Length: 293
Image (cartoon, rainbow, N blue to C red; front, top):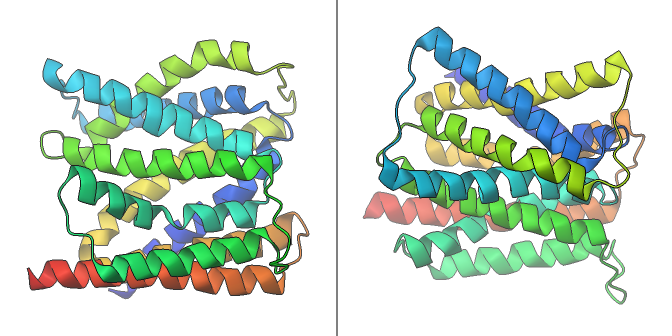
């Protein structure tokens, strides 16, 4: 049990750090090109994994449209909007906004999957929204200035929630690894023409260290960490693991302080407590209800 929690904590640290990693990468690579390159190395990693395990499986024609939709919305647009947003958005604030994904996912699940939406979920949503407002206004509630990059991060959060719903629907017929591979391949194919159409000017680093950082973070964040999480999540209580994943914004704060010398403000800490508290309240109550059912 301790070993499982140690590995899960490692995954949370990696995913929380990804906001700062992305902020660093968009300094040297234009966002759409960065999306294409990251997806390229993720696909190479996944293909290598499938060749090692010899688990290539065909996808039925009836599921191809859903896979394409998932690849375009949940993979390409999700990652592209993430890097576009991080050009100007604060990585800590971005992490806090993405921390509310479980709330939007639950609302979408209530609409498309007919899952129950409880009063506790609505209460948690209100608490989290208060926290976001507090962070965005930086504690000065009389003035509201929304960075354009944060709007792209909101789109990232929305596409991430859609990806979760689509994956949940497809997983009834297709194993998660196959879904991940084929959707990332679709995302990669779509990203190639857009890298040359949207990025003007096209920025690409010639430094080996920047390329090593790009490849390393792509493989570790979206490949290794995901596999470790999926392998260890079965050994712990799901509700406790979901609460653990809500620590990502705090990890982003600490890594931002270390790598970007970005100070942690009181408004960020207080807003984080509201956001994480609202998400935990919503998630905990929903899982409790499921257990009762």
